[in-house]
Amino acid sequence: AYMLCLGSSLLYLVMSLMCAVRATILASSCQKDLLTTLVRLPVDEFVAEIDAAAGTESVEAFESQGISTVLRVPFINGLSSASSSQRAVMSEAQLANRAADAVERQERSARSVMA
Image (cartoon, helix red, strand yellow):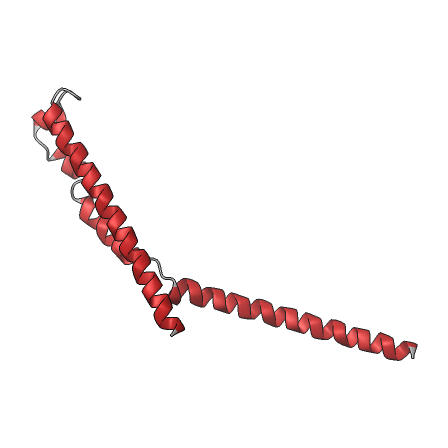
């Protein structure tokens, strides 16, 4: 009876190790699928946005500005600083809208996969 218990315990040990290895492989496969297909980040949109901003936020764009813009005294021109702060608020609002759209697209794609 002792050998039977010892043999069955070793059999259960081997079976549990096989199940654990298989579960690890399956979890890794599901993780890869989730990260690459189902919940895909909008990387292409971010790259396009960075490329669009590259024309105005580069060294070449700074060097092509007029001398009066480059050598201006900060905080003296109230109107220009107000308009630039309004542009910053507008761009933040646009970024928030884009983020909300991306989340909505991800939710729709998750719902379509579940259906």
